[in-house]
Length: 260
Image (cartoon, rainbow, N blue to C red; front, side, top):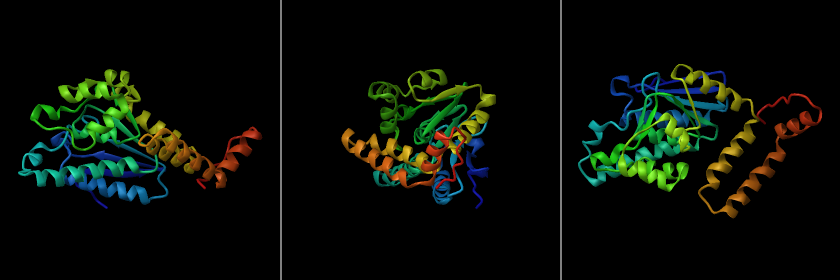
């Protein structure tokens, strides 16, 4: 289906979502959030897709929420409706069972940073900047920033970013673990595509089990997480790809995975 604020395409077994409000530096509008939710639902149902890349194009990932729209929220009730919707969209992106890669060029601020945090892997161009500047207008991040950031980089570093509202550059984001890798801007998308291809070659069910075990396990106590990991491990022994992978290893040949 056509979208107004994003571009969506499938290539090989990869989905590419491009935020597409260039005149607004890809600020996350209510309409864009709705379309991101729609495309996340579509991807979740598409068994042909193995990986997802989310990008903002060559100039900016996303400059934050659409402040013009946010400024029109005239009551706590309206604010609640908006922020719950924004959280639901980020949650849907985070819960897509296959790997989701954020390819970040330029600004990833506020809601843009929160969108990147909802992805599994963050690749940054060397001109990327990350930040949660909401404190500077008297509010806090509401689409997961206060929670996902601290889980990713640690509470102390997260609080410094949240309390100051100041952005950090790509190299500092890499140093503190906010991004996985940094590349020259000109090669970022090629690197993201290469990584997506690498993931897509892995046995699909094991890939999904890895993601769910890691993502779900971090939110529960260690022993509950270990029990869940064990269930994921044992479930894979019913799959064709596990048998094929072990047989290929013993026979010293390349495995032929089918996704089953």
